[in-house]
Length: 427
Image (cartoon, rainbow, N blue to C red; front, side, top):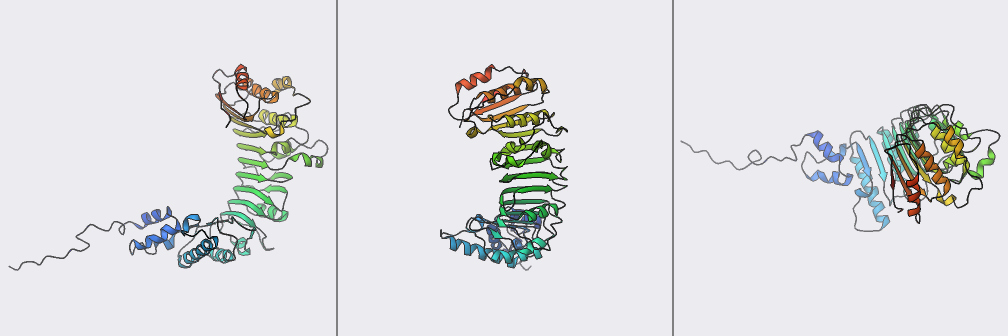
């Protein structure tokens, strides 16, 4: 009988290569959690992994994609440019998202070439953050990219061609440290019919914010502007506005009995969360402040207000908002102590306020930055007396305000038997 020759070890007799045997969708999931640099390095794992990174639908080029020992910014920048060129050259398949955000990158002409390439690939999400140098002028080809659903630009200049007719599929727009003309801004917003989220921070080139967006749900803005108005924004639910300019210098522009407060809320019937930051309450208080709004904000459950307690009109505007928000659950009050050094010559008539204000449904109140002056304490006393379901009030003063304020707070009567006052030491 012939004896069978022993076989040499082969792949079927040894432990299988688990890395190579992973299903394609698992490999895709692994790659999605890696930086582009780490994803490219997986090419050495096996033939199955070799060019798998080249089909990644999300490309992010940031500080994690470049590793060099040198601190020379020019060397880092040149290596970053080579990496992006290499990846885009070898990439196959769709690119859903492209993000370029590197601290050593300035506006270079290569970005125009990459933008053109991405628009031809029907990019859906485009994020460009230029951290250094002058504002980068966006290439005109981007304004013809109708596949965009999310656009995010930092330190850029937008000047669309005359043929620009809007982004018909754009749902999210985030513009920070940007320059664009008044007509460009208005046309950009009104010609994005599906726009749901809009963020504007530190902009120039326009001062009037005319927001016409029928599907807008989220609006966050912080900057210097003169006026703001909403049109066809009946779906807007989350609004955060910070005016970085003391509005007193512009109040002379208003005449007669016009009210910014009334104008502001006409097209916001369903607002759920509202943040009034920086000096925007001063803007709202311009004109004749009503006792309450003609139409209550029945959906408003969270309200944050930054206020100067030595400004009677700001107090009136705040009380108007409280009277007009029957279902308000959370309230945050942030004092502007830098303006409260000048004492009031007239005191607020709190007796009238107590009489005219309905019972509130507040459950949680946070008060920050107070210094213990009488208008602040009167306001806190008012909240405690008109909040029968209040559960917790947190008070955090500025520095050098301590024991006496805490004692004063504990003396106040409370409409809610379970209300807890928490005093936090100033940081």
